[in-house]
Structure formats: structure tokens, C-alpha cells
Length: 462
Image 1 (cartoon, rainbow, N blue to C red):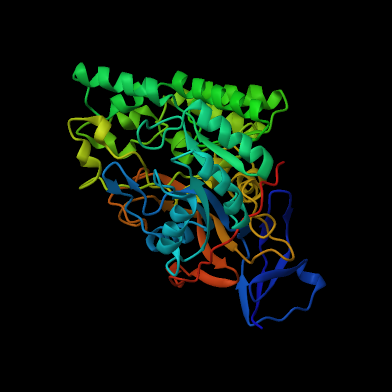
Image 2: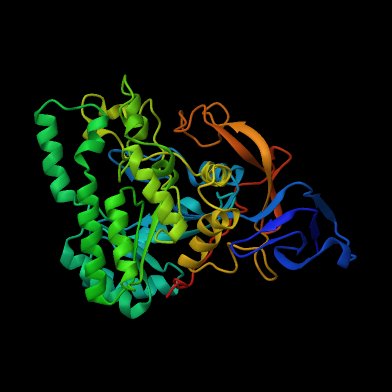
């Protein structure tokens, strides 16, 4: 039996900050104790003096190897999970996709085949429902038994992922009975398509118009609508990638009414803005994602929502497309720019920078990046905390280290950084995944295939 002792650090979880040592046996945490109260010996001792000892991050929203807009996101499960590990994330929950006319199970099997034997860290799946009908509604029950307990639907992308209100209501009704969690991409895609057509007709073709046609009010309208549909169905709802203060206001109002309504935001909405979308010479295409970046004055509302728990989770919506050969498919027509941005490697660091800047506390950092997503998606306390019995997914984090984010040094398989040149305080030093070193001494020491599929339980907020 391999024993690892992590000694001398400050252990930070969502609930505590403790100067304790952590003992790991094989893949699990077995004990925490003050350094002067134990006589533990171990095969491997990690000196964490002056460092934070934190749970591995849980990124509940990634898109590895995702077909979209005539191309495929540039990170494979191998490259994407390796980059996640570099950034202190030890579990991702990716999205399997049901193709129209096919079964949910067939979509899930396709994504299992992509991920099996290639991941550096542990992974689970949500299911995107592209075709809501009697057959797929029944299959929701069997997927829950297989550990896929959340289902994503879209009020956006007509002709691709779009579901109408009746389909959304039926899926929510099914979830109210089987315990599943419906996740919603909330934008009024029917109205947005009209605005896209009109903008192109006026000759408005640059990347910045992507943000102008996907209006904040249309995010707010769709957010309001899916909340009320969930209320009619008697089901919880989780709204992904909340970007606009008006949409957040709808979530806040519903939560004040006591409804089981949840929301996530992403680092791009907290740190970037429409100023990036407006960068000249087509550079703005790097920042095209949906929901889109908003004006800077939306950021304060999102930070406040994270502090007040009206937003519970920060995920990345990691869906990278290279600037050359993919994003440039939309030169002369912003509507053809593949929607998505890289980010899985930088979430934990950017949120630590938010601690340094005074937006959130250290424990809130761990809550929104580790514990809350683990609870939301049925992984806690196996993931998201450091406690006896938990998986030994542990990060030794240097809170004083300085780094500059850059495409030259990141490990995501994409040719640009959305945060090029940004200075960050804090850096991952060591990463354990189920007790096994993945990052050590500034080097990747993991391997493809170490990461295991993790069947998920039901949402633990209900």
C-alpha cells in the first residue's frame, strides 16, 4: 500500500482553513491531523510549507472533441485533460451529444469511445438532448442508472440543438420524476437568428457584431422562460454560462421565491468583455462564444452573484477552436465563426487572482471551483473536498508564485490564449489524481488512460 504524506501546508476547503497534514493511502484520503499530533510515516512526503493544499478542481462544463459549425473543438480528451491537470483541475464533466434521430445511449457510447483510455484525469458526462420525443424521454431514466444524471437543452441554435417550449417542458417533467437535473443554454435563438440576418444585410460582418445581435435582453428573456417552465414542471433547472446582469436578475428573483434554480458563470465573463470582441483585424474572433462577452459593467453584477450565492459554480465552457484554420472560417461573416473559447487550464488560477483582487474569499474560491460543482453534479464528497474517504485529488498551490498567461506556455491544443500577457499571482505546484502524481515540480508526470469514468449520483442540492 502506497502512503503519501502532505505536510506543512494550509488545507483550504469550502468550509475550513486548517494547518494540518494530510495522509493518503493508495487513492483515498484517510486522515488529517496537526503536525505535532501524529507520527505518520509514508513512502512519499510532499513538503507544502508556505503553500495551500486544496481539492482538485471540478470543471462541470467542457467540450472536448466536439463537432460544431463544420469543424471540431481542437482539444482531444487526451490534450484537454492534460491541460486541465496543469491548471489544478482533476475532474471534468463533458457533454455527450445525442444526434437527431438517434438514441441517447448511442450518443453516450460515442463519447465513451472518445474518452476511454485517453484521459489524464477523471471524467463524467452530461447528455445533450437534441431530439426530445417519447423514446428519448424514456431513455433519460436508463442514463441516470448509468451515472449520467444531467441533461442539457437549448433555447438557441435553431436547426441544430434547439428545443421548443413544449419539448423543454416534457424533459423537465420527466426530470421531476427521475431526479435528473435539466441544464439550459438560455438565449432566444429564434429572435437572434432574425437579428443576425438583419445585421449581415446591413454589412455588419465583423466579430463584434456577434455580441451585438446576441442581446442581453434575449438571454434574460430565455432565462425567465426556462425558470417558469421548470416551475410548471416541478423540476430544478441549472442555467449554464450566465453572462448578463439581466439574466442573473431573473435567477436571483427565482431563488428569492425559493425555487430550485441554479446558475454558473465562466471566467471569460468575469475577466473579458466586448472590448475584446471589438479587437481589430479579426482578432475579436478569438473571443466569439455563446452566450457572448458583455460590456465590462456586467462584471460587477456577476461577482456579486458569486458572493451572494445566486451563482453557485464557475465552469469554463472550454470549447477551443484555433484562430488559424477554424476561427477564420468566419472572415467576412461573423455568424460562421465557430462559437467557443479555451479556458480549462486557467480557471483555478484566474479565480485565485480574484481572491488576490478581493472579489471572493479563499474558501469561496474552493466552493465555486471544487465543492459546489461536485455537489451539483452528484460527485461529493468523493470529489471537491479533502476529507477522510474522499478521492486523493489534491493540489499543492503556491499562492505567491507569479506567472504570465500565454499561448507560448499553455498546454491546451489551441494556437492563442484568451488571456495573452495577463499577469497572475498563484500557480499550481503539484497535482495528485486519486493519489497518483500528475503534475510534479513543474513537469507533467501523468499518463493517458489514468483518468477513470466516474458515474455520478443525483444533484445534492435538492
